[in-house]
Length: 626
Image (spheres, rainbow, N blue to C red):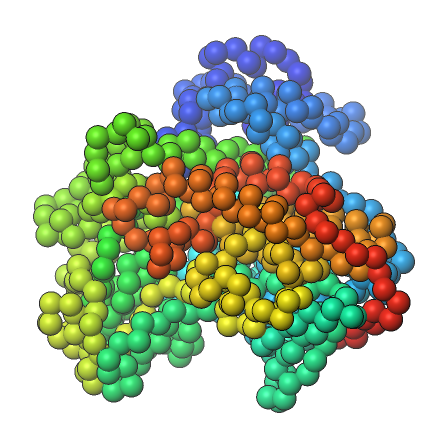
């Protein structure tokens, strides 16, 4: 509200120290600004007056807010210094997305195949349509949504604020501060409907192989149809939008086939277990204590006979009072009717949850602590989160000992407390601070050799996050596949998007583009789509048949990625995480601030690519359809 007031009135008196909010603590929303109630009321009354004057003057459109004003207002309303280089990205949020004018003349030469109809694939589809580029989306599932369509387990939701985990051009009045799975999936289906995306999708079509055809300057893509037969499609442009966390990883434990109850991965939750009495009296085991387990456990603990959680490594958990809180209709009204409110709200969330914590994730080489923390600020974070853990677990010293991590905070992605600590204290819940060694007909054997009798086993064991593009076989110009070039777990791509030897191939959610320090991955996807569309526009304007990333550009970029990661908490030897491959190299997450990646992907540098003009007789347009 304060930012809106300053924008509407340009009255400098509202910049007085008495009106300045306090800085947010950690990842807290700080919705009151830490201001006394009488000052909050004064600001609210002034906003009402300013909005009424705006309304009476005919609701003139918002003028664009200059970068310098965005910087100044954010510094004041956030109660702390937002670095000046954030101004361009924040200004884009504050002023709203700028959409390129739609091209009404389809370019049948520059058609594309998109793999996947999750968020990434749908964002690509919308921009391809706006650019007049015909395309087909090949989706292995029955509908759009990707990971959100697949992950239907109890408690599933996002750990990023709803209004930040949103497509910038498609606002939604979220019912809760952190969106739950069904609402997120509904939002994505609404996005598909609003943009008529399904007309481009062939559902239940799974890509198994893609091979670059040198003479035709095109990609030949083999797809398995619903009838089990294979079909080959051809297009000059190939965009992978398959995601990092979409192929379940299940450990190959002895005795897996012998279990007489139900055993499944968390991403394959059986719908019949959602029935009200399906879990009543059942002995349920959850293998893993990461993000999925932390959502499932509290959601089912009161419905089961007993719940046993097998935890190889504890997680750092942050408090958040808004995790289950609903968003008032008053806030929805403000977002829909008050100019700039939604945009300033999103910009503030972007600062709190995106890059604010990033500077504290750098290893101080002089810091004496070998494992518990990496610098003085990180040690302060440790004390705060440890204090919260002890407060929540109270006199349960056994749980405190098992739940307190011995590695630095943010060494793994921080989790938000959704009732996990309260769940652990329940009499029907047992925490086993050990891994699992084998499956028996009646349960699990832990690493101490103790057998646990179970009726249902949920494998919350994560995904093949470092096996980029798995299990597809993508073959480049040289005849070598990505697996042959990268090995099993060592993918490298320039900006995580483009790879030498693979012309006209663009990867969304590619290597080193996941988020370890916070923020909304939708922001990253929008950066990638913008970069890809800029590349396609270059191909169109220059009549190019081939764009291929130069090897030296890719090598230089990935050397910088590794240097940066070597200085950060994720390479710290005190813990393991899903960001690193078996050799210890960080493959999954971004080493930069989101703000840096936004700047890196704003425009394509033509000198980063070797190009070839269009040859006569290159690929013809692909037929799109369901």
